[in-house]
Image (cartoon, rainbow, N blue to C red):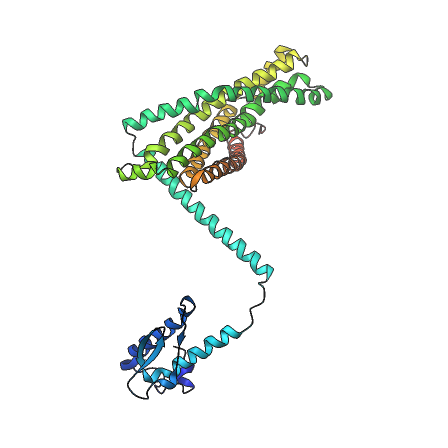
Length: 371
C-alpha cells in the first residue's frame, strides 16, 4: 500500500500500520487492487462506489454481478486506486523507445542467449565425457563399429578426391613462384608441409563436417521430433550414452585415419603435377620433401585431426538433441551444425597452430619454426 495513502490522511489508520491491523489492511487492499488489475479481462468492469459504503462495518464493491466485502475504513483507498487507474488510462501514449536503448537491449539479449547456450553445451559435453569413461555396454560397442564403418570407410573416396585435387592445385600455384627465385626443385617441401600440417587436417574436417555433421544432426533431430529419445528415457536408458557416445568416439577415431588418407593422396597429387607437368626432377622433389618434414609435423596434423573430430561430433549431436519441432526445425539444426562446426574448426586450427608452434620452439630452440 503506498505510504501517501496514510500520510495524506486518506486513511485514518496511522503509519506505520499497527501489527494488529496489518494483516487485515494488506489483505483487503490486495483484493481491491487485484480486482482492478483483472478489469480489462472482464466484459463488465469493476465499479468502485465509496459513497455507497457505510461508515462502519463491512462494505461492498459491485464487481460484475456479485458483491465483494471489504472493510469500510478502506473505501478511500479504493477510490484512490480508481482515480489513479483513470488517470493512467487517459494519459497519452509514451514516446517511441530510444534506438540506442533498443540496440543495447538487443545486444544484452543476444549475450544472455549466447551464455546460456554455451553453458548448456558445456553440460552436454560433460555428460558425453562421463559416458565415455563410465564404460560402454556390448550394444554400445556394436553401435560404435557400425558408426566407424559409416563415418570412416564410406568417407574415404570423398576425402581422397578432395586431398588429391588440393595437392595438385598447390603444385600448380607454388611452382611458378619458386621457379622465379631459382628454387623450383624445392617445391616438394612446401607441398608436403602444407598438406600434412595445415591443409590436410582442415580440409578433411570441413568435408566431414558437411557429410557427417549434417547426417548426425538430421538423424538425432528426427529421433527427437518423433519422440524416440523420450522413449529411451522412459525405458531407463541414457540417450547420451546410447546414441551420442558411439558417434563421438567413432568420429574421434576415424578423423585422424581419414586425414592420413587425405595427406597421402594430396602429396601424390602434388608430386604428379610437379614432376609430370611442371618438369621438376623426381629425386630433388622427394629429397627436399623429406628434409622439410619431421615426425613432429606428422603429429601436429594428427593432433589437429583428433580435436577436429571431437568438435564435429559434439556440435552435430548437440544440435540434433536441441533441434526445433517439425521438418523445418531439423533442417535449421543441420544448417546450424555445419556453420557452427566450420567456424569452430577454423578457430581451433588457429589456437592449435599457435600452441604447437610454441611447443616446437621450446623443444627444439635451435631449429627454425616450420609453421
